[in-house]
Amino acid sequence: MASVLFSGLANAQEPFKIYGKYMVNGGSVLGAKIKIEKNGVQVKLLEQDKSKFEFPLEYDCDYVFSFMKDGYVTKKVQVSTKVPKEKQTLEFESFKFDVEIFKQYEGVNTVIYNQPVGKIRFNDVLNEFDYDTDYTKSIQSEIAKAEEALKEKAKEELKQAPVVVKTEPVKNNSTNGVGVDLNKALGGGLKPKNELKSNSSPKNSSTPMPTKTSALTGIVTMGSYTAAVYLNPNMKTYGWINYGDNTGRVEIATREEFEAKFREYMEK
Image (cartoon, rainbow, N blue to C red; front, side, top):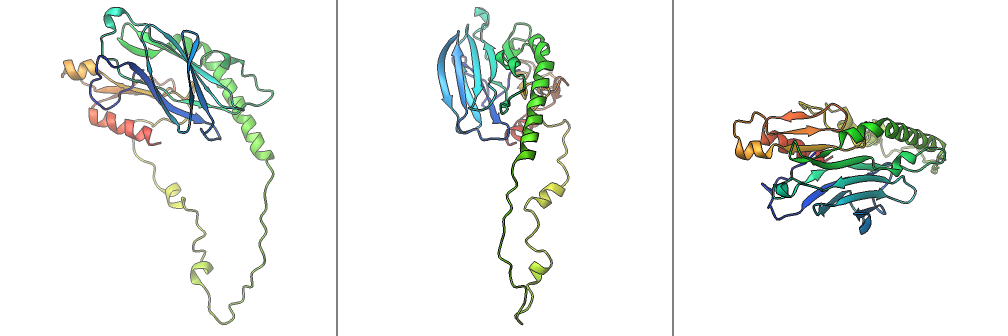
């Protein structure tokens, strides 16, 4: 659903925007591309050098965003900006979604990716942009099967990768009367840099934070009840977050908590 950018209310003249994270499973985003089609015609081809993306959209159009990289399965997300004329003056918040693409392997049926992994459209009841949940449910199981097969192939490839063994000349362990380096003798400097980090306690959180992938398409969304905040101060909750794992919305009580969850996710 709509995801808020912390810059106050949007100007009514500003275009509706989509933005999010672009992830390449097991690889770098360098060399990845985003092809943008409007009403069936390509209008942009973005060369990615970072994981974040943003793009303004015009109303009354059908967009298709294709996330691709050589050797990887292309994923598509469809966005319809068809909004009733009388509602196009409303202040819609930017919509956030994340996409992760996987390496292509022979023998894995990826025909499901010929169609969009998700569709976003205007919800006339909520007066905001939202996922087409009926469409998502219709392809969810097939996407889950394909991504599981791709992950298994990636594991097999990793197991079959040749192991590189480095050889070093044998060192003379004699101290020659110089003495013993106690730091080396006790194993100093041999601990992994992230040992303390891995042994540290996980951060407490009232709700589970999103992972890079989900049961659907790796899409995470959050939004604020703009009308409630600015027009109805008696609203009990400020906004919501949806981790895309079929658990539904998690209500967020205050603006401070909302912004904290937004920052925590964006820093992942």
